[in-house]
Amino acid sequence: MGNSESTLMNNILTRSALLDFGIQCGLFAIAAVLKTEKFYDLAGSGTFIFLALQSLRWGGHYYLRQKIQTGLVAAWGCRLGLYLFSRVMAAGQDRRFNKVRDNPKVFFFYWTVQAVWVFATLLPTLILNAESKDQVIGIRDYVGWGMWVVGFLMETVADRQKSVFRADPENAGNFITSGLWSICRHPNYFGEILLWTGLFISSSSVMSGRQYISALSPMFVWFLLSRVSGVPILERQGMRKWGNDPRYLEYVKKVPVLFPFFGGK
Image (tube, rainbow, N blue to C red; front, side, top):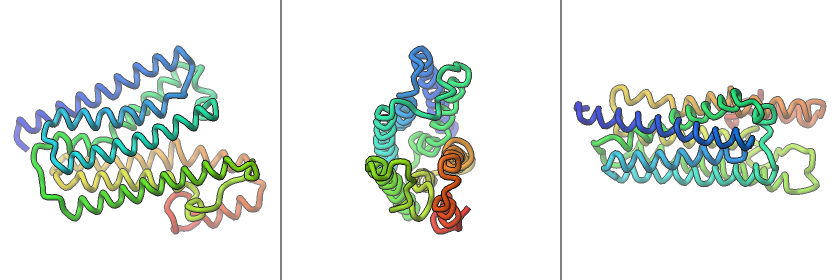
């Protein structure tokens, strides 16, 4: 990579990081004053879309691979952002913030984590859109985009299945074990990890040297969902609610936590 290309790359990454953190800080200020978390997830997904489109514009090349990648990020962001926003509006609150929204310091930490999540996860796309060289679309791209499609569909279908299950009064107080939820306990999170892994693989078609550090993107998504904010919280809630139910204990024993078909607990 030449000096001018390296400068452009660093410039786009720096501007993206500053915009990302600036957006989250600004929206935190509004959320803290209003003491609401209702637009938290919508803000995160919206920032993904904005930075993906903005990095494409800053790069100024508009290669096919870049346009496809940016479009996939935008499709994911629109779907997930609107889904989570509609869910929290219907519920009236997000339980993750019950002990947070009235504590500005902790609330700010949540918004900071969101900024890190956006930048770290989007890093392969930012690098791709800043890259001046192009390569013929090849097997790595098709594999990556294929993984994105499978992951996106899995996440979307899993969310839909759970929404339908919860909307049925007969299922009040019960846990879902049907559909994709029969092959792992968190199929939506598995889909999320799979689609971001796919986007890294397709982006890597034009990467070299230090750019491969963006492999941290799917690793970070996996860590965040499996160790921090996703699976651990839901698993604890599940045990508190159904820990004395033999059916739930059998479900936990037989159905994998995250990766389908790879054992129970």
